[in-house]
Image (tube, rainbow, N blue to C red; front, side, top):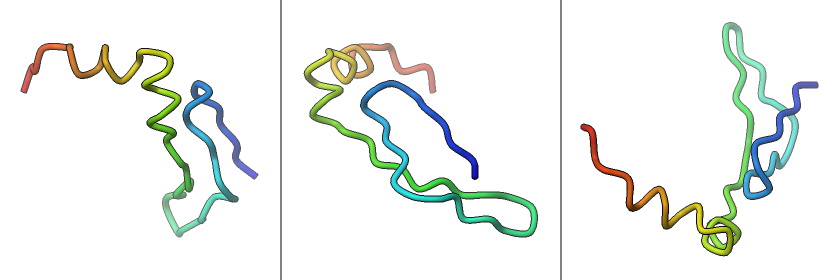
Length: 50
């Protein structure tokens, strides 16, 4: 089983869905936790480079 961790505000919700050439990993991104940690605000303040 594939498992990953990326900050406290991203949570893997189940096992990966394996396909013939790729795998999908179901995750939940906790926006409220991002706001509490100030992450969402700093992302919104970054200049748009597109």
